[in-house]
Length: 410
Image (cartoon, rainbow, N blue to C red; front, side, top):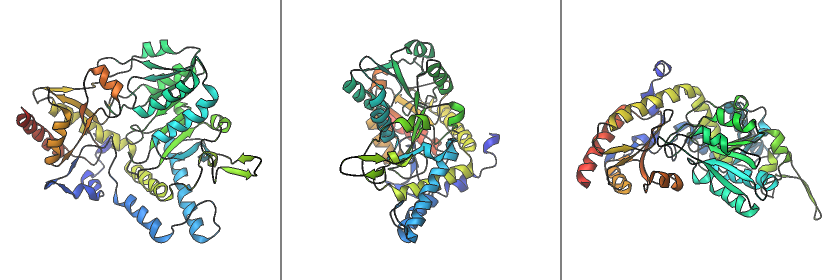
């Protein structure tokens, strides 16, 4: 509570123009933040400003517009470096997003280090983006994806996880926070256990970056990936952090402009980090706007954001438990910002459609985590996910509306 006392959250909320919209004649209640967050006006303005005042390609031009665009774009790399406390900006690789970053590591690092009989260890909590690329790699290499189990609360069983680490394990790839359940994995313990066996670790921080302070040097993590659009920024841009010692030895993921040093018809040599992994014209406008999103988050303070969102999650959890027939899916002792639930035998899709008619946006389905839904023997869940710009009043309206939906469908 103390951490959020200094923040005027109603003033913060006013920075997000979409929150003044109506849906089906009702004020918008946006509880789909785990899928993508809304954008403050400063981020929207940054996009318009780039296209209005200095639209130009980066890295290659000597003229004023190109220099201005390059400086603004590269300033975001420095902001990301500071945000996650990377040693140097060269360790920050811009990608299309979390999925693209994982595929980069699977293709480039995995192509070098994974062979027949090897294993990639993941958890049962993973988004498809942190499962399918490893399956594809293993199918191509004759290797195997191994899955660490979870308990009935949706928590990783650490003793079993540690038993699965062995001489065949080439990489541990796990989510920091589950997008489907909100479970926070014990990432420090996971990294320590893997490193004790000299096994590198990739963390999917797509759900952690918007809600938590990240220090990659303190964690000692080898790779970390996240997306801008879940943390107030635009779609289509994300980050791969990697330790320089690993990135230097990895071959390029794609070929083209900017990732080259010298090209002849006989042979090409490659650029230095980070450009070695950034072929072609980058997502300039969205990269610059991502920098504005980072500035905005930093001004509020991620510790304040985390505290406020924990207040909202705790309040919503207490309120939804007053509704008969509600089953919360995922009740980990440590969780963030996600309330995933079933309402008796009602189908999540039907609930989502009716809530939309009341102006409430939630996510329904398997949340790109079909194997996880299979573990719970359900087709999917209703997922309400919260951001710091949400309010207790919105939660009250959501609970009231959910009661009405139950009555209508019953």
